[in-house]
Length: 175
Image 1 (spheres, rainbow, N blue to C red):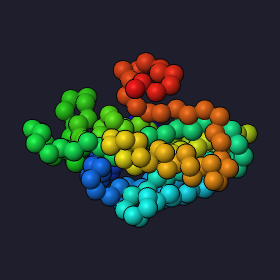
Image 2: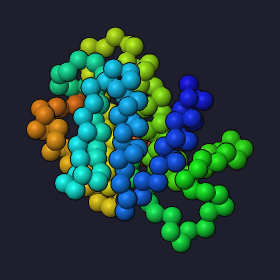
Image 3: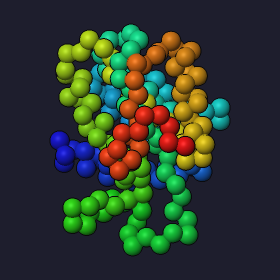
Image 4: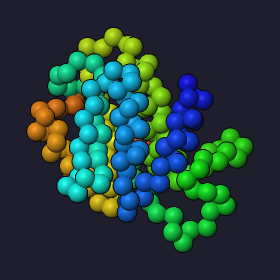
């Protein structure tokens, strides 16, 4: 499973999803991966149609369940000194480098890699996945996601956000 996750991470890093550009190629990639394992997928485009959130559900279509969530955008690399291409995953020893490898494409890759396993498991509650746009510039996509889920009548019971927190659980927003 680790090798599969690393392969997916390489794919995700290759999408240059800095907030100033579209994330649609990455969102389409993610949507296809979730559709392939039987998830019900919703795309929620921004008003200009240049970006989107992706929301997918495995299991029964009812309220409750767990939401695994992350953001698709990364901070710009302009004027930064990289020793390798920031949009190509590079392995050095036991570390993987590339823009977004930790925040948040690593978490997204792990969720995507496990989705087929989760899809095969018999579950009594839904498992949701939400990947948003423009977190790095004000959590714009997250607000759009909340409004969209409200309109769809979807209410997960708990959310796990894959932000790097040095392996400490944070209850609530850090800011």
